Length: 198
Ligand code: ATP
Ligand code: MG
Image (cartoon, rainbow, N blue to C red):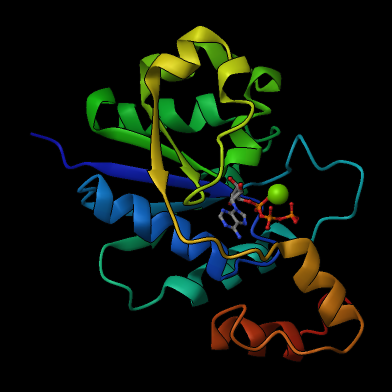
């Protein structure tokens, strides 16, 4: 019997409490045993802006999850030389012994709505269960338009709305505004002491 593994992919530039809340709600609602954060190496969807180095994003993800029971961070996409593709990451976890029925890929709704642009997206429902979050009381617009194989495989978890994004945090940091309580304390310190987003 393999343990239920939830993969939380993202650019994490920087990681914030919206990411952590999404992962935690999915973990507890679906009885997932462990959450693995997988920061992207070179994100295929974000070539239009300069992304912070993979090592800095990996370090911040480590700082955000250090000491959190059943949470860990994987270097797999950071160390990959090619652009990061979810399908490759899922295959690696399966090769490592996680059965597809015990593998969950967690994304926000905005990300899943782009899924038809991901490499080999039709394979994803065969490799894992796709999990996405909706906000309480909000219509899940766009879900009906997803490809059928994705829609049939998708699990929706309701999470409290926390309307923060990495974009907003970078803008705040650039403008010298507070990011306290939007990111874990150690991430805030890391951003400040390394002069990120200035
Ligand atoms: P950016 O503003 O640079 O796009 P982001 O905040 O969207 O950053 P990503 O690293 O792009 O962060 O997102 C990783 C995953 O986390 C995506 O699936 C995204 O939908 C989800 N996510 C991001 N912010 C939130 C939030 N506040 N609540 C729930 N899910 C979120
Ligand atoms: Mg985003």
